[in-house]
Image (cartoon, rainbow, N blue to C red; front, side, top):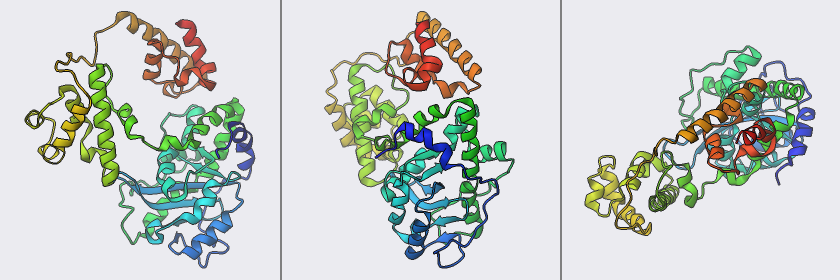
Length: 394
């Protein structure tokens, strides 16, 4: 059960009271059979889980591969409680379920950076990780860039330059070289001191509640699952479609998602976005028409052509489709309104010393200008900080 926002806000500070100002060095962890940085034995994993039981906060990170698969392959889990830092090897262990109680422990805050992908990758192994403190989100709310990387945050806030030599390492390869393990451990060594520092700054700015709202969204399991019928909503360059082509986009995206899941292959290996978009716009009715499309590879026609045409038929398209103009005609009134909203947006961000994209995206402003009232600008702290001003301008 997710931790309520109010509980997150009230316990962030208390869970991070302990000072973590000294870079962590590897220590002998009580209960673990020997001094080590890589756990490959289930007995040692159980001992680690037992030792971390009841911890107020732990730093957590993962290494994974997803270039060749639909589901990311979990390759490494890095953990520290501020006293010892270890890597857990899922490749050697096969099962890291012993970490599930830690992942779910309401009394243990899991400190992570840019956590969404890591939470998604960990879900099949340990379930939903919560509650989470995300240092990237917290950093954005104190005025740092919205998507600041971990190494840059460590450099700016702790004055430490991290090694970058292994950013493209193959984490599935074994054995792992000692320098790779050390590199991986750097990803958790500084998370606890960063979280403590950012928590204090958020309290000073009166923005702890803002962070609690943002973190609450991380505790929704649905956020990490893609329903095939909703996959088309993530496609770019599809705004302005007529109703018939929108149906085709939904059909094709759902077919691609299901096929990718069944075969555990990246969706782009099934059909890349550019080719999918071209099919939606052209709506081919035969294998010959599909094969004649320059953006559709011959292999796709050979292996998937019949299924693609079946999705075209399922979209129930009319014989004559309207001409498509995805950019649409310039609307001077709308452009002027967007410029007014953007000016208010930029002014509010400057007053709060926030990056503008932390407050709102261009699409958020467009939705508001189009009459939509269901976006993030009109709920929570963003409504108070910006949304009310934008509504007044409308």
